[in-house]
Image (cartoon, rainbow, N blue to C red):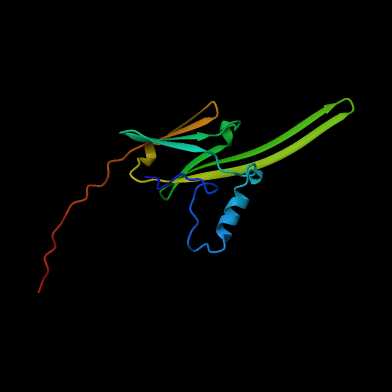
Length: 148
């Protein structure tokens, strides 16, 4: 359904044959460094399957429920989050003002899902999206006669 294979770009992947000088590996390691992880890194998601549904558990700790947007468009489910935080603190001889902004999104390909029956629950920093399975299209075999 989702066409996803979890893997670590940083560890354990063989070097590609077309990556003769290690350029791709260099960029993968550089941009997957923990230094870059705090800006717009996608959230972790677990995908489970039962007989009747697919379940996505997305880790979104500290996110306000109102900042979560879930939409289905052209066969893709997209979960996006936009956080805008401002802290103003004033005390005697002390002023603290901080602002931060961040947004990230993750998309999942849908196949044989009842899009109108998708449900989402956000509790204790975990977003659980339930995607009921649709019956797959019945494919049948047809013999075609060749005409003279």
